[in-house]
Image (cartoon, rainbow, N blue to C red; front, side, top):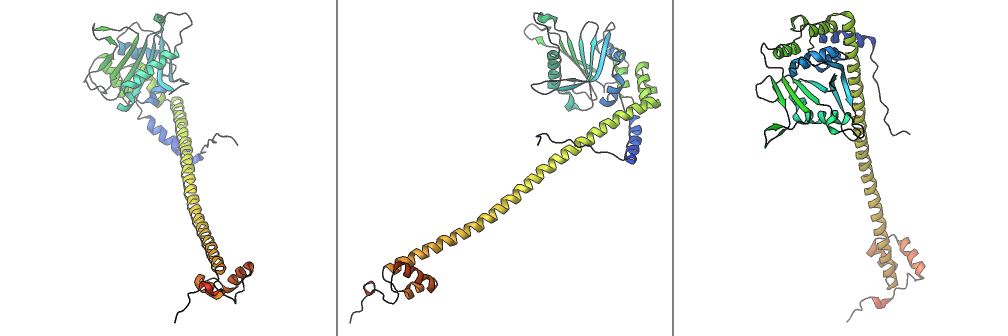
Length: 335
């Protein structure tokens, strides 16, 4: 029997599918670019959109993105693998991880550090290549709240040599963008678009167009529904699997408890029986000793409460005449 547990999939009825599809269509209208599901759909294989936001965030008007993939997985055979919201590469070979986060917990500094390290490990240097050929990488968090708490629109984190007050220059960069900060700058308008639910109210045409396509175009909306249906099905399947695993754990626990209880009951019963047998054997030994010392069968029966026939059998085995007690074991009466 295979050690792997069988994965179970819940097959929804047509009515359930129609109901969920209607719910998804309603949900699509509420999506924003800062929501990772919508961000992944809008930016996948669209380097021009990644280029637009990176130029604004990094203030580099000459930056040219040549590739952009969303939900990009980096495997770590010895530890925790990650899935990047977006992974982009520019014409100079620089690599960018763009993360959208609606919760503060998802944008802790250690996560930025870990993502950057995996991006480096994912970029293998060929044998003999100098280390200074390692491409620059950027980990950029676009956060719903001001995670770092400085009431600033953007934060640039760089390694520095403290004693010299200079940058270390290892090519690793972390940027936090505070989407809650509102102003009329290019960055402020970009963040307003990331929080906007109505595509027609957006500042940047390219972002408005892609949002309209997936919200209002029939083909785009259907595509979005299919993606949400896949996510929903994965959630249902995951829930079923976890539920079955939990059920099995509880079943095993209950089985163990029942087994322990049954074992205790049986053990107690066997213990009682063994105790009775030991006590009976002890009584028989005492009866034998009494007969050997000359007590009569009647006296042994009186002292031990054994059945007379049992005492007679012991006497017979010892070849003792039950009617002839040996008087020297009795206390003699004196006048």
